[in-house]
Image 1 (tube, rainbow over the protein chains, first blue to last red):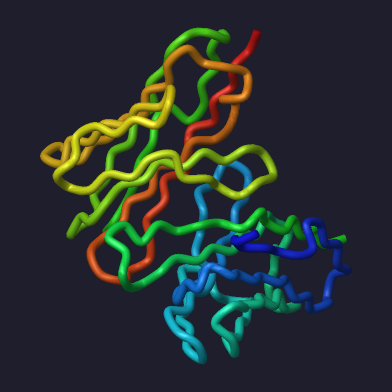
Image 2 (image 1 turned 45 degrees about the vertical axis):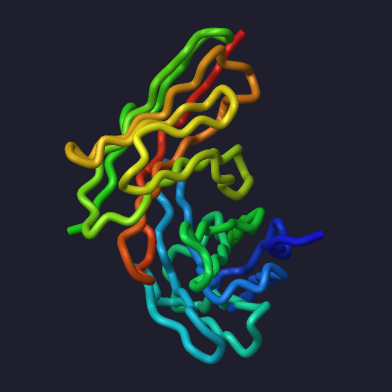
Length: 115
Length: 112
């Protein structure tokens, strides 16, 4: 069963704590992305990675960190420095080669709530 | 600056009626444009994708059009169903491996 999985679906965190959101894909895609979605807002790019062991900041990287040690995995850590972390987080992946359209596929999302 | 604007922000229609959602973009150099459907609390799912040379693409009751000269796209939904209630997001890709540019979406509610 191919696709992108995110876990957990719902996550609660106390203020001041770091938390890591998981994203795994078995589509053999090179590029992976993390987005944040707030009510009434479009998706905003946090971080992205085109290849293993390399990643770039997106538009709203402050307070977040990522790693890309394996092609299949791109975990996102929401640190205590992120001032307003409550949001819906979406992970996505897409091929960067051998595909005319290079469609981006999304995971089911993780809803993070800071208490 | 690369931008994607969608209208209307929200729309309510009766079941069985048609509707059209609009997308204007200023992304350059243009590569392709996608429409995604996002159900509440779920990840977006691709409906259609069009490149510069394509004016129309259909997927069942969904028909997307693209006018690359005026940089406008529309998504037409025919004979709406309650399950069409969702957010519809227009996404434009520039050439190369640059990040996608997302619109804020149109929230469609289909009521009985």
